[in-house]
Length: 59
Image (cartoon, rainbow, N blue to C red; front, side):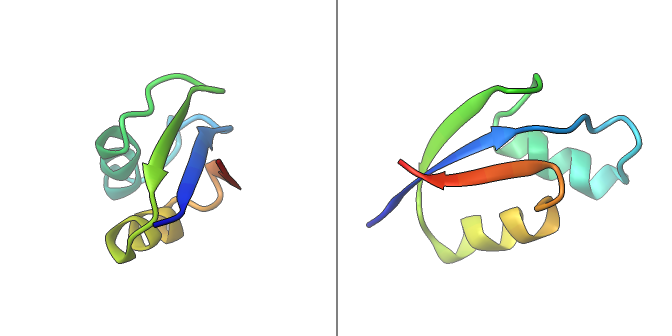
């Protein structure tokens, strides 16, 4: 499977609780923090909800 690097680029302060929960579930706490995930349908759904907060790159 393909690896994706997800970086939090915007704050979650003004976000709705569902978006805050998705960012927390991804394990991102601070701006510019990155994590690498294997690509899956569940991950794509999460990233679609917070696409305006994160940057996604191929790892």
